Length: 254
Ligand code: COA
Image 1: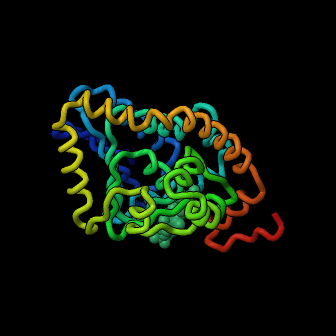
Image 2: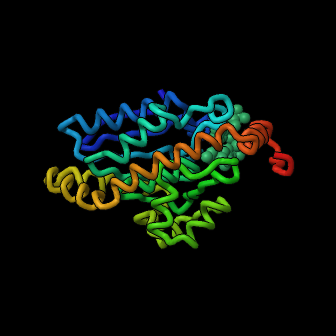
């Protein structure tokens, strides 16, 4: 299993573990993540959810092999959408601990977590345009809203990396910690949440999320339509082929 789960001290630990592919997320892994979130929500003993990768990487994003082979990855009832629906709809607080790279959907998903702790070696990146794609699952709504259009444009149009301190300054991460300490710190914060009155925590989270929720749900549908079209484009096909062939893409003829 490339998604590992366990519950301890009121916290559901969900770990992305596919080190040989830099924790790239396959369709099966999205399905497992969706199931893990649904199980955590349904389990009365779980009061907070902790999501993390391994010591070297959070996730390299969507499996590019899957992108290249399937054009329905984000459509309808896709596992990726099921996971993001489970994450964005989670009533319980979600804490993320990020070591190393969080690319593409790896950064997008952080925009929907509640407490986001980054290691000092973390790198956030959303290279959708670079892959011939466009933002997905709310990133083109949340990032400009939180950080302003001008700063979001550098990250979403150029696909520039976001350093940990910059992520905190932009308002998309909570705090930066030494790489060896981030997971333990995030876990301690999740356990603090788990000891608080659960209904008060969940009501407060709901109130914080409620104003933006309808616009987010509607915008995700708009993004998915555009993303689906992009996936089938010549630009995207060239970008995927270039990654898999370990060469620079050539967009001069696409
Ligand atoms: N999808 C599929 N496979 C991936 C992957 C992804 N997103 N990211 C890494 N891999 C695979 C590589 O193809 C390679 O497989 P191989 O050993 O069978 O050839 C293996 O994981 C190791 O990756 P490699 O690129 O050699 O590691 P690195 O340490 O040099 O670089 C990254 C790590 C994460 C910086 C780099 O792999 C990368 O940029 N990945 C793509 C990120 C991306 O664009 N994601 C999609 C965003 S929408």
